[in-house]
Length: 79
Picture (spheres, one colour):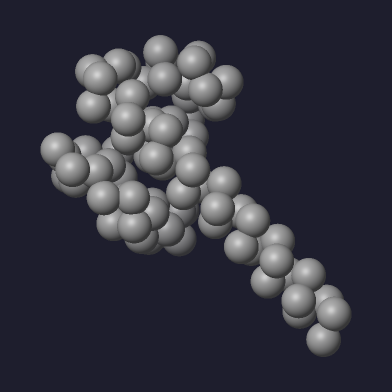
């Protein structure tokens, strides 16, 4: 039971980090910043930022975080 709780907690923390990253990237996309600039400013890998930008592109101009997160999960599941 404790192991399951630890796994659930770790998964929740990872999801929270991803949602926060999507939120920050979306704000920077709205400001017209490119992938390399965003990656540099957030100190994230360009590949991570590219993947989130790819998932977000169809969500413009509102960039709904939940929609982007779900699209990102589907994209990662296909890899």
